[in-house]
Amino acid sequence: MGILSAIKKQLPKVIEWSDDSSDTIVYRYPVTDRKEIMTGSQLTVRESQVAIFVAQGKIADVFLPGRHKLATENLPILTTIFSWKYAFESPYTGEIYFVNTKQFINQKWGTSNPIMIRDNDFGMARIRAFGIFAFKIKDAATLMRELSGTGASYKTEDIVEQLKKIILNNLVDSIAESNIAVLDLAANYREFGAIAKEHALTDFDAYGIELTSIYIENISLPEEVAKALDTRTSVGMFGNEMGKYIQYQTAQAIPEAAKNTGGGIAAIGVGMGAGLSMMKSVTGAINEANGSYQPQAQPQAAQATEKCYKCGAAVPVGSKFCSVCGSTVNVKVKCQSCGFDNNPSAKFCGECGKKLTESAPVCKKCGSALQAKQRFCPECGTEN
Image (cartoon, rainbow, N blue to C red; front, side):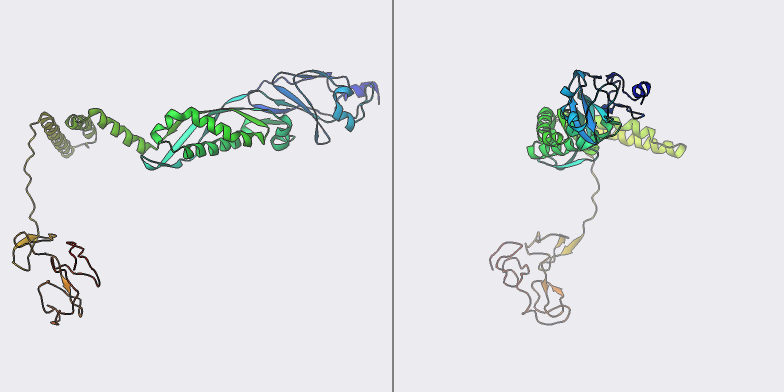
């Protein structure tokens, strides 16, 4: 092989990587046309970088930040794999990887679905949470073995989803185990972040990654629960002056009602009617707040009645006792033969005519029907 041909196969005398991105974690130095790494070449590893030599598919030597001359004395592992010679001849055609060890900040995390937790105030509550975290590579060799492999590059987007799942699992556990009320979670964001970080360290270590920080920006309730809390807060601001709150709510509703009226004369009439009705409500609320509210008498609907089996007086349907004689009204004695419900005073069934002496027992005080072997009356509590 001629000298010129050998020179063409050599990598540049200075091997380095100038990172102009913000999301590249691993970068493979381009080796094309079977170019070879020559002994005596200079390797420049910048701050926040680590260089890894890979030979025959295995991780060989690792170089920390600084300027390194590639020679047998500082390539102990490669020396055992290859035989470094002299001049322009070299058998090493492996790969060089640069690993970025700076912090990758402002990585966003968040719940894709609401998290169900048990709360003392709301019972079961669904919450959402989101924030940011930061990480960096602390073991480049472990990262290559477990995640990045031998690809040309490995970026944050390739690993962030997995890291987010680890963070969320540990954060949810820390919130659930704390038993802190949902309304008090905002006062404990820093504590939850610290606990979640501590619990996630082992999982991150398995990938050669260090979790440097977790920040919780918000833990929120579902929209309907948040609206209910806002309404509750608004009511609380008025204290005992409920009349003022009613006035405020009614005044807010009038413009909305006016907007919802349709076109045409009929619609105008409807709108006017709605407006007059609301004005009456406003007037009533104002009078109530001033202590001069007098509710209008409303006609009462006729109430259904039934006759007392003992004295014949009319009593409202559903009453348990007659208001005249005090007898039980709706207690019936079931005929054991046909199942007809008879009055407690009846001796013979009004349906089949059979004697009711063998009918179900009744309470000696109120006449309520008793079940077999029932000691106390379910209506009046009398012992029988």
